[in-house]
Amino acid sequence: MLLRTEKLTKRFGGLVAVKSVDLNVNRGEILGIIGPNGAGKTTLTNLVSGVFYPTDGRTYFEDRDITFLPAHVRARMGIARTFQLVRPLRDFTAFENVVVSCLFARGESLREARKSAWRICELVELEEPERRLDRLTVFELKKLEIARALGCQPKLLILDEVMAGLNVEEMQRMIQLVKSLREKQMTICVIEHVMSVISQLTDRVVVLDRGEIIAEGPYEEVAHDPKVVSAYLGEEA
Image 1: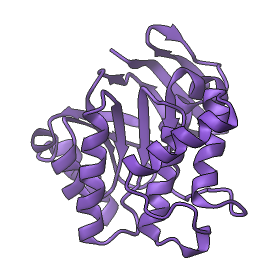
Image 2: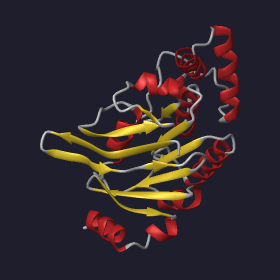
Image 3: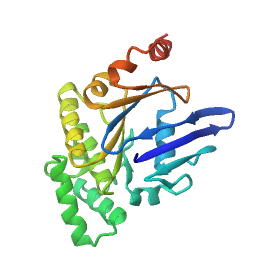
Image 4: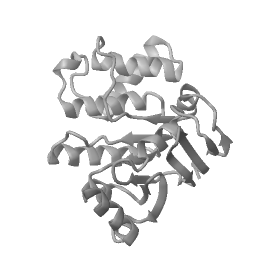
């Protein structure tokens, strides 16, 4: 077990965004986290990565209690994430963005960080990384976001809707990229709305609705769970 939460809860005033969530992430797996809009997926991601602290409950990473450790400490421990809205340093080139990640997350010298950044850019197939960010496509910006996360040398990589804005061909290429990262002994959590991606990519799926886990298991199993069907039909209604 790489990461687990126990009764993790987050309240914002009277709103319970995440309620008593027991999440287990197995080492080496690709775990999908799905659910209708407002289900609590991003809040749960923020709790795991240290953006938010919980109201109640605990989080453990490699059996260490990290519940109230700040995000930058968790990043150095090996928890990295992407964001739905890509947030690169706009005045820097793509390559320089990855260098900065390596400098701060790894504590490398500038020379070492540049070497690491080149390797990461090659790994994610980010071509001509010394371009300005306004020259990058949406797909390339998504790959840059992953590259920046990889600068942390993550044991757990959390991908928050990396498929948003991509066409079908780009999605397939992104799926292959994520699979290649798993082959490098990386554990990956995928928060995603595109069910075709979840079905192709994940070993196991956790379904959230109104802040609670309502189902978990292989995609084909949870996709036919009456509670899951009801949650998504309720969203469409």
